Length: 443
Ligand code: UDX
Image 1 (tube, rainbow, N blue to C red):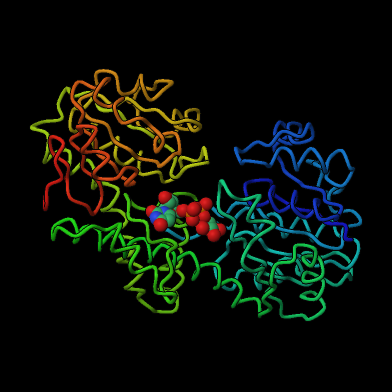
Image 2 (image 1 turned 90 degrees about the horizontal axis):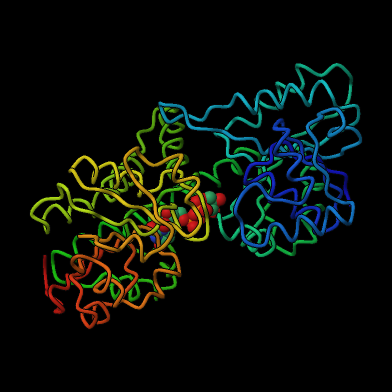
């Protein structure tokens, strides 16, 4: 078992550190935020992630998981240092590497023994070579340093499960000894390890996210066409997915992807391509399609309702997807901007993301504590996030609470017959509308 430091306790760093300690390694997580470190030392996760608190507490109690703000203490005696600091998106779509740079300099000034540096943060192809050069330039002693790209594929909301059940662990190393060490560290996870060089590993991360985003934009385009032709996207997607070459996953049509990864990584990859004079046309279209899809429900509402001016509209779900409180790039933001602009009174409810929503949603949105309150007196309801709570609703609530039972569903939470039986006017994605309890063909 190894002595490991993890720098950065954001989403990726914290889950990585906790998972490595759970399989028996001794892990110290380093962060500059004192309040956050104090919280984590008490076994409290600063992010909402099902199951994470329990695993954290277990490993803190077992003496395998530590948190500190002190780099010297964090790096001392460590054979492996994971870099998991943020790489936020700059205005032009490129990744901002200032935090990664800082860590490289910190490592160089603190390490006193040979060390493998592992990059978990998603960084443009070539960055690991740059980090290694930076560390070597600032080293004050003659220790050996090597770098490994070990990209992260965790999904928010499923991160603990994914950490122990992922499809693959990618280990990109140009020095065999460093790659061997990271492969060894990951053995207890019993997940297939894929060995490659540093640059290919960096590209695997971007290409994987870009490909998944492409699947989503593709199915959303098919949905928009289905709707006009009277076909049903749910059936189309199920029938396509039965082809093993296509697969069922990431073929759920909706109001577009959001979150901290897909929007940022797709834009970054188009930038990376442009540096080598390649116009990544397909990915540019994927991004455009996704931006359009965020507007699709307000657009529908404008067609169906005479006016949105003065109308009370309920947004059910604000997080970018269920089981997370993450609001980053959530379609709820774009939608509420557009609805407010059209003069609507916007009321939001989310089972978990209310605190973050208050910080990120446009001014003018008001918030309530339950579905029922959100629907009371509403002229239209928008399903933005497919939380189980909404999927399990007795649909009579829409008729009972709303001024009129008009529902725009961005996640196809209900069957058309179910919506018809409940007497809703129901507009979803890639399917026929339900008007006055009757399924209509075409829109
Ligand atoms: C994603 C990747 O899955 C993960 O491997 C990577 O490390 C980080 O980015 P995450 O952002 O947590 O993870 O969310 P994910 O569950 O992949 O969903 C991303 C977005 O796509 C969400 O907005 C979701 O609503 C949307 N989505 C997903 C669809 O619209 N349709 C689908 O079929 C699947």
